[in-house]
Length: 455
Image 1 (tube, rainbow, N blue to C red):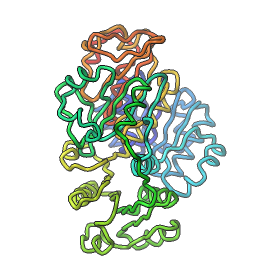
Image 2: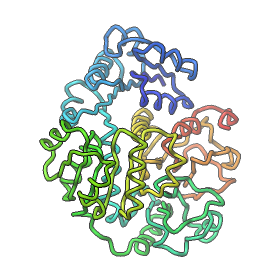
Image 3: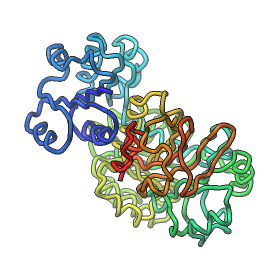
Image 4: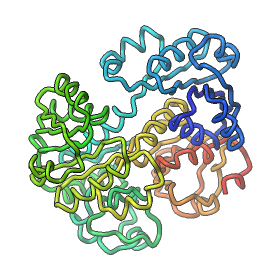
């Protein structure tokens, strides 16, 4: 499959890395020739320097021979134009990244008028995950995912004390009908294995027979409480802060935004109804205390500085705020995150890359998918003859720690796999993979007989 990526920024590179292990022929376009030369030495991709939105360049790369094109330059207008031209020149599927709120208010019109298959907005995607966590977590009673005979439920381990202190081997022995899909600990999602021990404040994601999950929900969720009217403080009035405040205010939450840029504050005040916008430094504790910081139910850090986001979030958690969420863009902080004991840490690059990958793969292989806390993806994939994973015991595939085969549908059977379980052609495989390593899924289900390449 031929894929063109226009723009070699963070998102373009992240998507390239995720596609490398799959059966893809990748062309990367950017106007920075030095950057392209450096990337060409690191990755097995074709690099083309030039202006991505010109007819001449798109004809030069023979865009009509590509199966998919994604435009993610720094300009929304350039992305829309490039995707539209590529479609007009014969590329069958095109997508563009856009971030301007004015564009997001007319997405359907833009897609129809410019003949673009999909517009992707990282700020909208991350906002949706935060919103779901803050608004829906207390109304989730039937699991967040059901497929055929399976269900998935999320709850804090303290709601089921019998689980606390068990390692994963003990858990499987005691609850053979269930599988631990993932654990959120201190804001970081992990795929648990053998000796990992369940702790009282862990947020657990359990999969099993749909009826078993529904029965479990009655035990672990108890009386649900409404999140309507909750008080939320957002540090950073950028695009993520704007979209999140808009949705929470519409839902009925009491929202405050603290933004350092005065001009931006005027914009937010004009665009947002029922949101208090405060011009000030979000790191100023005196200001935060004056704005009733300690009475907040939730605290979201969404500035453009990862270090500031994490430090503010840590301070909020130490002050006893119930739900603390932080946005980060660098994976270098992943080891630190789990030590901070936050409730949720999201990376917009990972979430956006996952969204684009789902669109590239289409529905032929990936039947369904759902995000887990914006850090992992639960996928249902159709297994075909010739794929790397076919007819090999799972224990011999040498799956990395960030991937878990959670279940296999085989005809009318639903298998909770063990080490000697083999994936057969025609199986529907349910697996969990961390978004930061989602490219491995491409390797696992690549059509080749050389299983050794997976190790």
